Image (tube, rainbow, N blue to C red; front, top):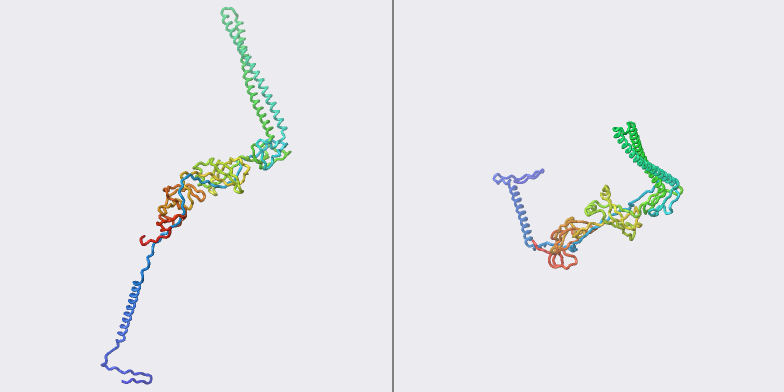
Length: 463
């Protein structure tokens, strides 16, 4: 059949009924194409894997990495057991241990002032500083002495009268005894008629009169004794008045109670001073003390070892070639300082060079530390965790337990048991630990830990 074209149409030839049906051929061809592509991909992947395995098998074996051990170069010291102590350094201020304010105990006009009595000047013990007009007080002393003399005279008279009365009592007692004997004799003779009743009555009256006279004498003796006691009290009162007058007279002279430095003067010549008026202030130049503060921990150490009378040395905080002045701890402040937590101590200076210091001077105080026997002194860098250090044992670090006893700047006083022949490592290592290889600086190294020369050691697997 022919293909007819025309008018835009295409006419396909018709198939005969006897021709086979081929509608499923394109589907079969697509499935075969997919299988072919999958097989090709598997083939390529297998070739790639094979090539990679072959390349890995043919690659030369890499050199095996060796373990490395580093040897550290360190400095060491020999352990030397001895008695060590750490002085405590503090800063303090000098103060006067004795300061007095002089007052005029009597009133009056100032007659005299010592030319040495000036602020900042040194006055000697007993030196006259101020004299007050003594005229009134001299008169009071004279009157008091006269009163004492009058009282003593009256006492003498009373005692004399007392003595006379005692003699009179003795005579009256004898007279009474004689009258009683006459009465008894008359009464015995009355029965025999030798004497009359009138005689006996007369003798009875005599006994009575003499008894009354004796009683009167005895009463007078009591009165005289009371008078003596009264005069004795009057004498004591007069003597007290005399002592007061003499003291007032003595107080017209104001003297220095001790050798010291004048810090204030409040009186001038010809001025009038009243009783109890302050005229001067003086501190004792030979009684200086220094106050300084230590930490509570240091205070506990000093207290445990003996605090009082512990020696100290005091020097100026400024100045070149300042001389040290010795002293000793005398007392402790009653309370801990709430701001710093420290304890204030007071040391008395016992050196004769007091002229080197004045109250208010800032000083450095060195307190004698606690002595630790059979102890070691090592650098701070040798201590780890405040409880151990390291020694060299067979070329490696070995830990030794310790106890810190005290500190002396960058040095530490410790108690530790280090075997003989082992040395203490003083170099600080961040990799420090048990068994770390070390070499002593400056020493020739032999083969061993770290290899020849103390370098890096190469080790194989498991080595």
